[in-house]
Amino acid sequence: MTPFNNNDNFSHFRRYLLVISSVLAVFGGSDIRVELAPVVGNASLVGRVWALYALVWLFSLYAFFGFVVYFYTERLTGFSVFLSDAKREGVRHYLHHLGRRSGWAAQRTEARGEVSVWPMDIEVEIYKHFEPEAQSRGYGSERPAQNVVEQGFVRINRFLWSMLVVRSLSARLLFGPTFFQYVLPPLWLVAAVLLANNSGWTGSLESVWASAWNESTQAPRRPDVLQPTMCEWKVEDRKH
Image (spheres, rainbow, N blue to C red):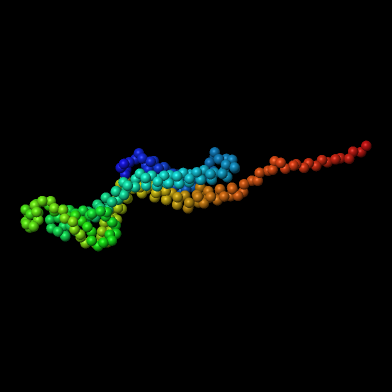
């Protein structure tokens, strides 16, 4: 499965998350109140409109939970490979430069294993690929006239290495389809939640919780159907 397949469960929940986040942002930012709609004219319905807002919040939680679950089950492996390639691409030219400095005639170098953001060692293990015509170009008779791959270590600048990796990851995550696939949905949800809960909207989490709590604590007491009814009869004295 490719990391950008748009027909899997992850893509469905990503769309759900974007839609419900847009609803929260529009309703919260515009202060749209369902209780003011002409359809909701009954006073009892207005008092219980918090249930509709609670349903919207529950669906938001459901969409976010599905987004996270299917990301780990369907996209995590492909996304990890994507990040590894992005980090390696960020330091590729730097490794080639170090390889050429450490040995003449080296055309390209590749780091062995994962490329870290903050390397623990001050040396990086590389493979140096020497061109087949090294001997014929006068570089020395000790080099055979064939493609030679040598393993060695080169010293690095930790700060420069880290900046190259961070720049490459940022470019991959903030531009292109990766941003719309993985970064935009959670960011848009966070922005929508903050907007809905800090704009005085009656459908905010605080208002919904307060309305639900007040209704549960102020529930009307049911009348006792078995309670006897006392009737007083007025007797008028008749004069004969």
